[in-house]
Length: 440
Image 1 (cartoon, rainbow, N blue to C red):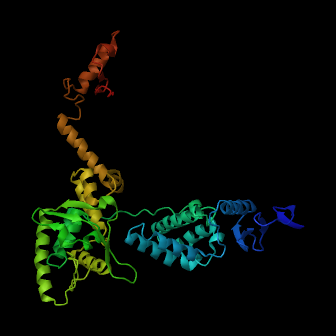
Image 2 (image 1 turned 90 degrees about the vertical axis):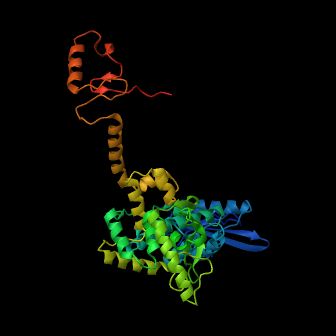
Image 3 (image 1 turned 90 degrees about the horizontal axis):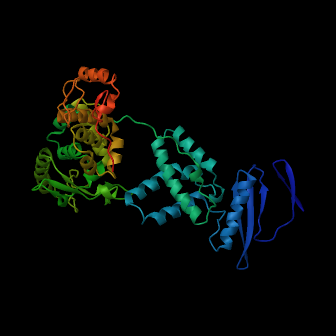
């Protein structure tokens, strides 16, 4: 006979047989559920760990049920890092190569050094919550930690479905609130100053495309000559450039299905690309070591893909040269979207140009422009209805314009009659004409 203490109450349990399991309190205060199975004449032991006895018992029942159902049971010795490496390898064929590289980088930098050696079966929601807090305290942005949360939620969700753990601990954790960053864009005058600063630079056309089409940095660097048709002034966005760790740059699928799109170029963009094409041809002839097997539009001086960090440094220098505030290269995309929407371009067209998943997403991201759009819509409605005098209360749709004084006079006169408003146009109220309610 053996005694266990649970929350101050003594419970006496007898020795259990294989496959039944037991729960005990560890010296470190946590609860451990242990069970042993007969596995082909070999004893297979499994353990689960939890902060409370009830949770340990629940996890233990899940292990026993998984064994009874013929599913894999958690290996108490497998570490979090070992599992995540296996999960990464298995997910490589199911996601974009660039996304996989981001997953690997986040786990390598922010998970493996801190909780990677912990046993998977021992992982608790509190461990993940502590990891997030420590990462934010160390200076990692809340947005990056939220990305990390999405990865862990997906990885541990798979582990739960496979029966390696009884539940997904990441699903029980709240990631840090997304930090709000003021969107910084350039106005038309500032855009012209930037384009003046990059004039005659070998990558001038890249900046012109960035501010006139809103293409992403990776999309610009992955653009190939075969995707550009200067005769019709169109180009196709078919990929994005990324740099895998320890490897050579490669082109992956666009970010989303709608990111694969066709764009109509402005005259300024067509002229810039024509100049760039001439310069590119001259560079090819001048450099015997030119190395561009896939025909990229934008390369370095030797025909190789443009390094993103070098591009960012050059961009910062051009901003300084033009006397402009420091912004990110990605903010040129925001600049293009803001200029389009503020000039009355239909949100549907702007959304398609940007490659967004939906118009709703576009309007949500660029909500700062909607106030201007609403003012323009109000002015347009005034122009359509001929409304220019603020004292005019009617609209020229089936009724005669009336001044507010005339309506007030009718109110006074009709209020003394039995019919009142019933004797008047049913669409006319004290404040003027009201259109009938829409039905159907």
